[in-house]
Length: 465
Image 1 (tube, helix red, strand yellow):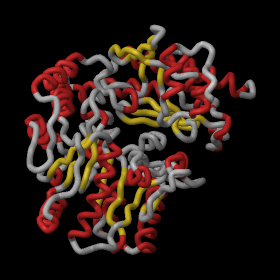
Image 2: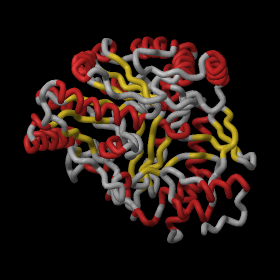
Image 3: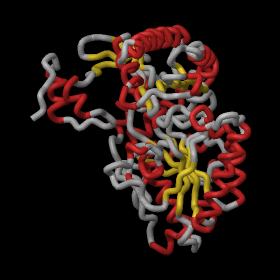
Image 4: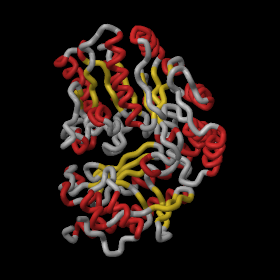
């Protein structure tokens, strides 16, 4: 039987007794109890005791408009009163789906997607899982049954369904789950700080990763490889920003070998990097593109998969042979989610939210760079309103702390004590991804609280923690 912490509230006791938490150290949760959040206010959340926290991660990279946008609440209530649910199966469609699909096509970053189709789901995991399935469907329909393998990257994150977790490159997502599924190939993450060799320049690093990709394709056979999946900026893997030229080299290789390019914009879509999509930032040409999170500012679960016209035409032709396109979700294009997504996109446009990101992002990036040179900071990186500081035992030697010391986790606990919520990712990477509406004054406060946590962590490390 679980022993409850002495000071845990009734809500906390219920949580420990009945709730299986995602991505949580479960025994530690049993000992310490949860942080119970009861209210949102702009870029802040408030716990059950009334303490306010600046939410430095926008929840899970997703609450772009903060935690109290009234226009989204009004849009949700209006739709609930008119049509709370209908489906998109068998040629039927709730009205808001048609409007949202057209609106998203207007947002699509490349012509091949603008002329294609959109398939709605409920999460980034489902959208990427659907992309995995469509890769198989597409190649079967084209008479290429052997062309099914998917190349993914170390430290990539694409979700938690069986297929999406398989494409993700984080070992904790595979161990004990009997993953990854067969047919997933792996190449290195474009993390120069972590993966660059001694004396190697960034250009040489990019060339080495391109050669690694070429060698893998040659070894496996291009006729067996269907797709390559990548985030423009790797989020959960450590806020990894690719060096210049990386995606240019990768895309040239994919095109030469007739390999589809799947772009996961679940974190980077809708303005996080200062452009509508990371696809535009890095000059990508996706065959399929997934979005979620900031599509609704996370107020309602929703995701979407953009499918190029070339792929759609193949799917449509093949479905006539089967009799029906045999894929979809009960909540694909849920009218409530569509209404909230439409209002979210209207706010992005009317309030120039992406322009605001471009205006305030330099303050966040400059503030994070001030941590460079700190005794336990090995690397600082960021783009737009996403950033990270990577902690290290010996920054000059790029030597990380031993994982079991839990240095990043200690930083996060101290930040929380100082009223800042952030996350420690694999390798003691402290991530920052605040709501897109954050002000410069709030960025300053975020940095001030992060500095306090970093000072506490240094003292703890020097004290033998």
